Amino acid sequence: MKQQFLEQLRSIIDAEQICEMEPMSKHTTFHVGGPADVLVLSQEDQLSRILRLCREWQEPYLMIGNGSNLLVGDKGIRGLVLKLISKDEGISVDDTRLRVDAGILLPKVARVAAEHGLTGMEFAAGIPGSIGGAIVMNSGAYGGEMKDIVSLVHVVDKNGQKKVLSSEDLEFGYRRSCILAKEYIITRVELTLSPGNQDIIFERMGELSKMRKAKQPLEYPSAGSTFKRPEGYFAGKLIMDAGLRGLTVGGAQVSEKHCGFVINTGGASAKDICTLIQKITAEVKRQSGVTLEPEVKLLGEFE
Image (cartoon, rainbow, N blue to C red):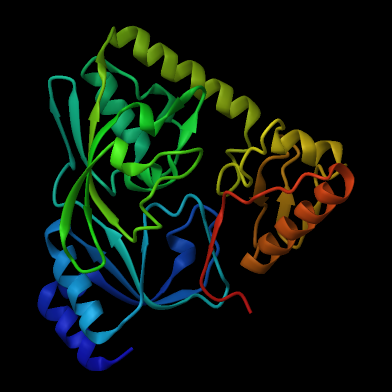
């Protein structure tokens, strides 16, 4: 990365917002990944200038949220990685509408909604991602999806121009939106919820939390469900029926509690996890004829 580029970057943001050779294991829920050349912790009002600078210098960049659906290669990421941070609390409530900075984590948003007696976010209380990432992937659980509660999304395009998108503009589908294809970066999200009984909302969140703890290997680092649900099937059952429960590659393992999760049992490398995902995909295809599609996104250099 050109030194002149970094000097201009330092004129836009504070030095402590620029982390050189930053281990990506600190920024993913798998807790693996080599260093990024430069990780920039950007505030919303700085983002447009940073993107224009990248375009001027033709510097590649990647945007991440909480890293809850990412697998970063052991050799890391060349170029710039951007991560949004908030100046303050990052959430405001106006009647039934929440305005949330993109980097705020879903459990925090769900808790604030519940504290204000607003229902509709309960399904997201246990999802470990940021709200921006949740919009990108149309995250969902227990019968709810982000598309059900999103009203407006504020984005910046690759040229640094700001836009506001409606829910319809986002082209939501199963675990997808148009954000990645159009190379937008989400900066802020507006949600519309419904009035509810605070006690009932917290009770439902507690029930879902117990269900997650009982069924999911939350005690280990992972990226949540490793595979998308194939139409007409459940990924976890296909993997279990293929006899792959507990299959291990290095420190990576098919969870014995829930076969839909690949977990880091300790000391796993990105290569371990990637190899295990490939083995699962090949064996399920061989036995059932179903092609599993990873929900986890691979970034950076693996070899």
